[in-house]
Length: 211
Image (cartoon, rainbow, N blue to C red; front, side, top):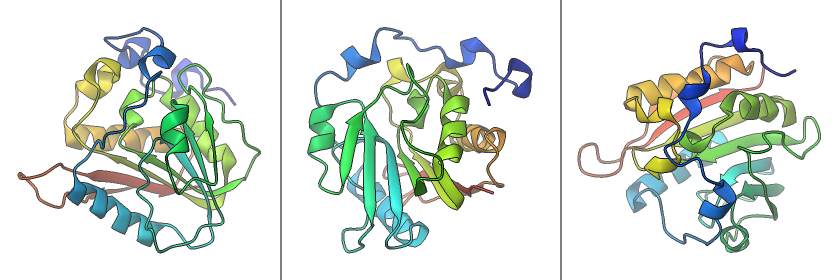
């Protein structure tokens, strides 16, 4: 069911970006770089090792060429949805992938209750229609399915939404938790996984499950 204005405290200006030009153009060439440092990547991989059950069907949302999944664990499927075909094709952990612009079409092209878990790694700040996307995530997850949203302090600032740019790390965690709650997920758990506070990239995760 689409969310109505009165269902949440946000206004349209909260999700405006400094660069409102086409996201398809912005992501038209591959960026084969990492968006968090090696220690933060390792911390996220350890978290996924605990969060994801072997043999799961996993949706890697807003995916790219880097997989943060533990290499020694087998999953039944890992479906990547992202913005650049070359990046997705270079990701060795994806069973299949598709290019899909969530800011233009927040509906997910998957059946109800299709996945055991959904991951969003260091990219939630770019969602201009997050409540619609999170509601769709809830739809495609099986009962009890997990959602883990990780973020750091690095971003393409011109493509991050205004509300994200206005908040600090604690505010970011509360914002993502609110997205989860408004989409009907269970009470989220907020975790600071920063491997070297003050010396390396911070890493925070908001995790929840479908009721």
